View (cartoon, rainbow, N blue to C red):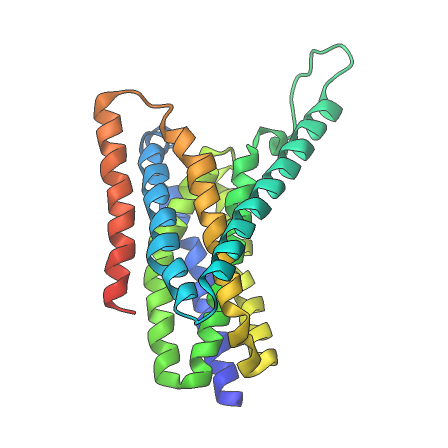
Length: 262
C-alpha cells in the first residue's frame, strides 16, 4: 500500500504541475495572444465535446450500470452547472452593484468584476475533471504499477493541450495571464484530493466513479454548448469561421487520438 501511495502521489503532482503549460503564453505579446485566443476557444469546444462523448460517456455506460441511470446523472451534471452559473451570474451582478459609485461615475472597478462568470465555470468544470483524474490514477495503481503508469501517461498527454486551451479561455474571459496560470494550478491540485480520497476508500471508490464521470460529462457538454459556442458565433468573418471550424475538428480529433493509447 505504501508503494501505491508514493506512486499515486508523485503521479498526481506531475499532472497538477502541467497546469503551468500556459507559461509559454506569458512571453507572448497581449495583442498576439488576443489574435490566437479565438483559435484556443474553438479548439476547447471540440476538446470538451470530444472528451464528453468519446471518453467519459462511453466509459460510464461500460460500467454495467443502467443506461437510464447514467443518462440521468449526465443530465444532473448539465443542470448542476446551469444552477452554478446562475449563482455566479447573480454574485457577479451583485458585486458590480455594490462597487457602483453613488454618483454613477466610478473611476475604476476591482479586477474581479471584469472577469466574466463563464471564466469561473471553466475553473469549476476543470476542478471536477482534475478531481476525477486523481481518482482514476490512484485506482489504476491499486490494480498494478504498470497500469498506473500507463494511465498517468495518458492523463498527462490529455492534460497538456487541455491546460493550454483552458489558459486561453481564462484570459479570454477576463483573467490576467498571471491569474489564469495561478488559478489553473489551484484547479489542478484537486487531482491530489481525488487521489487521497481514492486511496482512503480503496476498492469501494470504483462504485462511485461512473456517477462522477457522468456528472463531469454533463458539465463539459453544458460549458461547451452554453458558454463557448455562443462566443465563437460572435465571429462572422468567413476566414476566421473556417479556422474555428478546423480548430473544433482538431479538438475532437485529438480526443479520438487518445483512444489509441488508452
